Length: 383
Image (cartoon, rainbow, N blue to C red; front, side, top):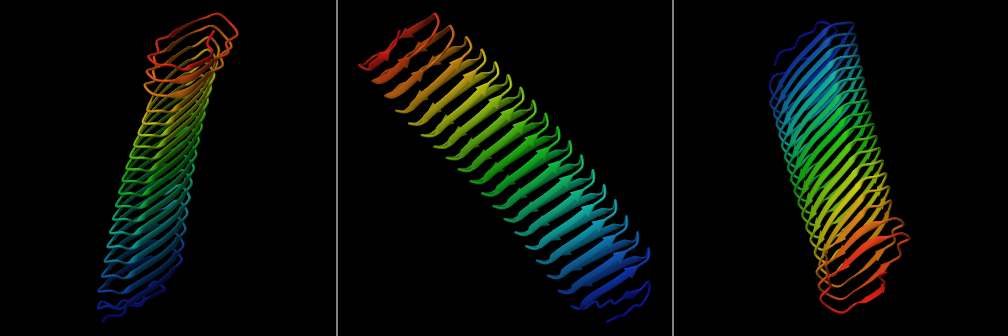
């Protein structure tokens, strides 16, 4: 064992012991703990805190006053770090532990967690938050002030990110986890989720939201402010998207899921649903709505403002379409269903159905209608 007293209060034990240090007034605190020990450090006053813990221990660090906090924890331990005042916080945790970091004041927070642990980070003030979590853990990040939040989670974990202030939020989740992202202020939100998880995204302020979900999960996205929302969901999941402000919403859902999209402001809504699911789309403002539903599902579409609505339903489902504003609606169904069309202006409609169904057409102006059906039905009011 060895003990050292300087720069306040420092205790150093090298064999499975406890290292506790308190440094005040601009000092430097350096600690090395090996073999399953506990390292506690408090640094106040623009100093530097370095800590290395190896062997299943716990590393706690508090740095206040524009300093730098570095922590390396290996062996199933817990690493907590609080940095306030424009500093830099780096943390590496390997071995099923927990890494939590709070950075306030335009700093940089970087964390790497490997081995089924939990990584939590809060960054406020135009900084950068980067987190890599591998092994069924949880990654949570809050970034406020025009920063960049990047997270990679592999192994059935949960990735949650909040970015406010024109930043970029990128998340990759692999392994049945949950990816949640909130981006406000003209930023870019990119998320890739693979393995039966849930992906939620909220983007406000003319940004771009991309989401890829594979494996029976749920993908929900809200984009406000002239942005682009693209989502790919494969594996019996649910895809929900709200786009407001002249943007583009594209969604691909495969595997018995539900695809819901709301686009307002002259945008484009594209949705592909395969596998007995439900596709719901609302487009307002001269946009284009494309929907493909395969597998006994339900397709709902509302298009307002001189746009184009295309719907393909295969598998005994229900297709509802409301088009207002001189558009084109094409319906190519292959099994029984119910179709309602309430348009208020001229358009062209093509119906190539192969089995019985009910069709109602209440149009208020001239149009062209083609019906090439191959079995009996109840046409309702076709003319």
